[in-house]
Image (cartoon, rainbow, N blue to C red):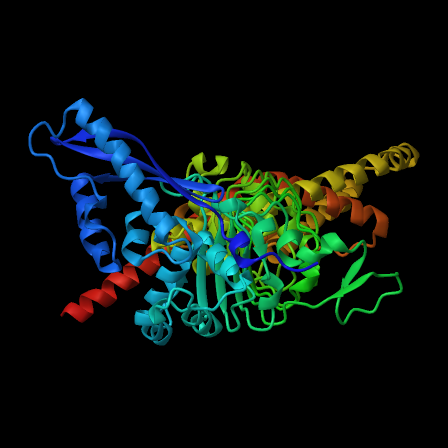
Length: 605
């Protein structure tokens, strides 16, 4: 079938004046322009019509075509209604005189450069004719609206010269030359009608295949169905940003997937039958799909193996999946989604250094314990209430920046120092909530660490005491039977037994003091010397008063006596050992401060 004539492809242009209004003592006429399915309104006063007519007289327009001026009663209702009809006839006559190429002054008068595809393309071509080279040399991001891209796309489909109106500045070739060399592009759409028109940009398809050298593109407020030719950017594109446009990653990364039931990325060996092999985004390193409506991370990520920066914030994600295909991923932003658990994420995020999980619904951090490459972690605005959750990340060797603000745990008194204490010796290396750890906080952390060690030691002693009790309970029947079987002995015969018991008790005291480092003269300070010396003297004298009695005893009985004495000592020593550790650490801090003050005083002198 033959193609329809060119005249039939041109949309019909119609104009009428639908009303008027009085503004500052003059009348403004409301003009409705319709080209094809698109319509818009323009407002002009009579003086604007007069200026237009003066410029059009060069085009051999009848001078008497425009209604004459009126000085008296120019705003009267009857005159306004009469003039409205006459001006409408005037505009209709002009459009009929120029059916193919509308004069530039008339096109601007009717705002063709804003709403009509020929006028939009001509205006863009003229702009690039004057400033295109400067924009390319500056390397700036160039902004094109979907309506402009739609106009260029439609113009390229028409079978007509690129300079149909005879103006070389408006030649479509200026646009094509510019788009072939442009590197940075931004396409901001809108969800409302454009200006005073009924044009909705989300319904206008546009083709991106005219761009041959793009490195970066940002698209917002556009429907994925209207974006054509995006895969043609794969050879050069390094940064892709899509906002307020996508319901899934697949419809952006692999739009052709809707045409094939089974597809696989190129270079992947598979035994399953496939209907298409899709080329990967080989040069893409940054993908920003934040502020969309994405509910899952689908298998389309297989097509972006080189991505290092991935932003999926402000979506509707509930699971972290399929990211194991991104071997080069370093920075991941999953903030403000619907994540509740993070089980085994190290199997998917092995090399991630920066992880943003703020604004989710996390209550536990159990899945983060093996992210050994993690340097920056943002957990603010979640549901973390227990400080004990910090144990899952406190052993991460590279962690330097941690954000926990706006979590329930932040209302705990001394929250910062208690969190930093979880990192033990690395507390000074961690920047919590954007604030560097102060010397005062480090001192408090050291005290908390000492208290924690004392508590651990106390628990260990308590466990040892429990074990001794169990041993005693197990040996009680044997001891009873032995005592019943033994004959009555004299006072002299009981002395070796008493000495043996005393010796075993002192031996256990010596072992406890040496092995557990309970207290020695080396840890005595000016602060706690009186109290600790008194305790030391007690234990020393107890050890020195041991009778030197060499008696052969049964090995099992000796062991029972030793365990019994050590258990008794552990219960008496636990509280004193706790306070001893605290006093020792406090004295160490005071001594360190005094040394610093003395050093500063010497510098001043």
